[in-house]
Length: 175
Image 1 (cartoon, rainbow, N blue to C red):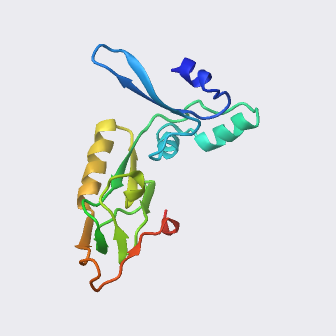
Image 2: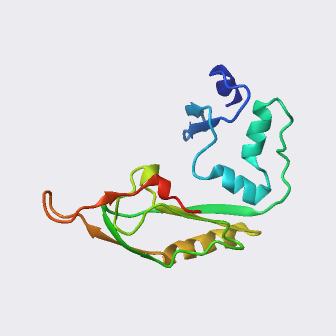
């Protein structure tokens, strides 16, 4: 992988590389990008290992030593909140509270907004990050928190019918 990253000219910064491994164990690079991985990877690194990847990337860009040594050995996971179909968001309840073991809760839609079935990252309604000292416990707690969230979405009216909807605003991200 490092050969492929160097071949595309990435020298000082983050790289996001995706690979496909076939049944015989051969690895094929399918994507290389000069960016940090998405899906709150930086947030997960910070909460699981105590590494501030954003500060480290700035240090690398300024040719300073980057602090990449873990300062903690925890576990972190993220659950993305999605909707199975397109429509108007009519209610949201039981969203977890941010606090110990739940360092991040984000929601990006308001009641009345048009929300879409999850087909792309931009269709995610929000996310919950869960941390702890045991991987299995973190995963189980994240699953339980995800199951408690209640989202109600009204189907869209027929074309040309009454009832206007407004799209979810990315500027409405709360954290």
